[in-house]
Image 1 (cartoon, one colour):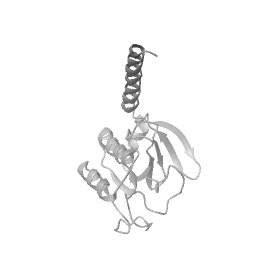
Image 2 (tube, rainbow, N blue to C red; image 1 turned 135 degrees about the horizontal axis):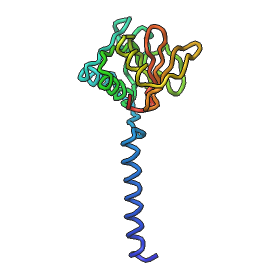
Image 3 (cartoon, rainbow, N blue to C red; image 1 turned 90 degrees about the vertical axis):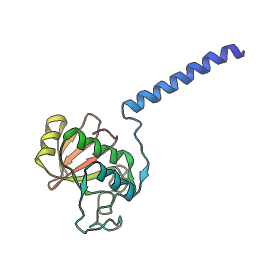
Image 4 (tube, one colour; image 1 turned 120 degrees about the horizontal axis):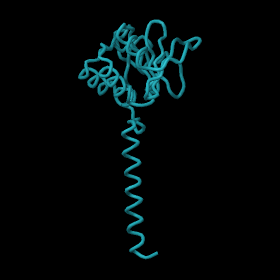
Length: 167
């Protein structure tokens, strides 16, 4: 193959890859998936005006009465911050990555979920703007955000599964 033919092909391929990357990022499909420290998460949450509580008054990931953010995905932190900004609601996180939750790939332990306290503001926002999926036996009332993230009202709290950093 001559150098004059490979140059345009290489430029076209580079342009195509860059376009796919830009579109993927713009759609929220390339959200950060890396795990961050408890300290980094709490700094970001505090700066966004999001509070958290722990029934045990602690942050030890291996203690189920603590609320820990150790190992939480950056996309999950970005997601709850996005939700707060979009909804305008006060947000209090009641659970993070600590032990004591159900396992699985998309679990609290793996950094995909947070629980937040029930408020009228959150209920009204979720039920108005998200798609109601129905009652999931043994869990609660589930809604899907346009981003694909799942919000499940589990009696005393909202369990939120962040696939992406959009709300």
